[in-house]
Length: 307
Ligand code: GLU
Image (cartoon, rainbow, N blue to C red):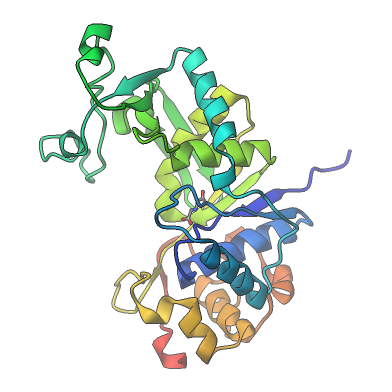
């Protein structure tokens, strides 16, 4: 029997220069796929046409090339696929799972809105049972929400372990198409990963809580669930989360001070893939890669010392 080779993806949002967290997630996605001779796809997530720019996409390709993170194929950018997303939203409508939501931004963000202990917003179903007469009273275009089941969705994450959510209790019905007609990330990413046969999703831990919603949509559309690996955060020695605002995180700045093998060596050592620092190319790191070696919690990176 021939084992199926993995299909992974980089799915950057071309809204600015890559930061070190993106580089780290891209490196792990690449190593996971290439260590099993799989296929790597690149997909520009440019749904938000206000924030994203083709120039940034071009710079991103250049940065991936500089890092040596090669991809086998580039998928069409999300901005060219709205008809496809519409088709999938219509499918959900045909299943009787969608309803129009007229809640304003102010209502959704009010302090009285229901939140979980960690601050996550849970949609209380305000518009779920509006009658046609009540709906007709609004003079604005609605967003469309999908009804979620009172059911537990569990991810067996290769880094984070078991993560579960009951969609009804922990998230509530969520938007798949906004009032201005824009399709949302959860829908687009599920359709794109599903249609391109992605079997492995490696990305930042900030997206772990999106996985149950995506798994629910995968089930409805008949796509297989991919394997998930949500990559830990990079933090500064004082515990501060390294963010895009820090210039030591921006690849444009880092490229002026380090070679690609130096940068990858720093990430490989901090994350546990290498026991000591040495400059290394992604190709050379393949033999060192295993999920078991990787640190599971925040990864401390002191980059100021090397710049
Ligand atoms: N486009 C998202 C980002 O740049 C990643 C989405 C994903 O990997 O599912 O953060």
